[in-house]
Amino acid sequence: MKKYEPLDLVEASFIGRGSVDIYATMFFDGRVDVDRLADAVVRVGALVPETLCRIDVSRMRYLPVASPDVVCEIEEEVRVGLKWDPETDTQVKILVGHGPDADSMMVGMTHVIVDGIGLTQYVSLLAAAYNGDLPTMHNVRSIDSILKGKKIGEPTEGEKVASTLGDQSIVLPHEGKQRILRRVTIPAEIMDAIHDKARVRGVKLNDVFIAACVRVVSRHLNLPVVRMPCPTNLRQFGDVGPLSVANMSGMYNTSFPVDPGDSFSHTVELVHREIAEMQARNRSMDGLATFSRICRWVPLRVLKSMARSSFSIPAIIYSNCGVLDPIQFGEAQVVTYFINGQYRPNYQLALCVTSYRGVTSFVHSLRGDKEGADAGEAVMRRIAGECEAWLTE
Image (spheres, rainbow, N blue to C red):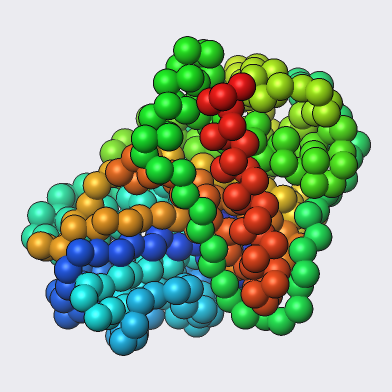
């Protein structure tokens, strides 16, 4: 039985109220040996035993699954992630697709045990085990060392405004329950130019992506102020070592004003200042530090009630998993690689951004129909277009 961490409990509280999964999708230039991959899963499971466990949500325990069956195959390219029950099955599921000329793979994990960064670390371990080069490492799942000694500052003005706005949602057509994934990309040469301009302006690429989201949502909903929750990687604020296959995401829950006459440069500089101020005040840890502390002595049933009432999944959310390292499984090189989050109802836009080999991917995964997927893709294209248009501003 493995001990749960506070963020595990927060995510587990959403089981039964929607999907709590996250996926890494890879397309190869060759073939993947499924038996060799299944062996790699078992070997990685020795380092991260939670992956081969089911979760007993009632008592928040990880219990080993007898004879875990993690890897599945289909005779076509992968299109969407597998759907499974983490309360009766393992916390990881892998789908390998055998296309006409090459293979593809989608690694799904529950958000209960990993965030986007934790998932990419798991994929790297899987490749290392597959390649016969799995290191001996200790996996750190606790955020105690990150939170220790951190002083949480007062909310920023953007946060105060956000608390008055309530939820905002881009209403898309939402008939049906089909699982659909859509991806929009910005090519490497354009990303290089955007990166260069961001460097000259003294802002980060993450600021650029958030600014583009804010401006598109503002126009789409005709809103003068946009609430934009942004998960952030807490690992950057402490030393958790080289391996942290875990959920270590905090949240910046703020808002940004957008006037119709504002330039993109104005918006991105506003975003940069707000995120920098929130970071300086450790605002991504607000609420989490207190919840983590009381987890040591408050009864589990009370903690569950607190998690359900205190934490929520916003209808519009942006997350950035950053630059993904080049990876290969044996002789098969990964030529395309991106992350996507939960398959959410069409009225919820969960935008996940990753970069691989210079190409930036904007990905939206949903439960709905083609009409809703097309509408969500159109929103992503406008967001990518905002980033590109900045180059000629």
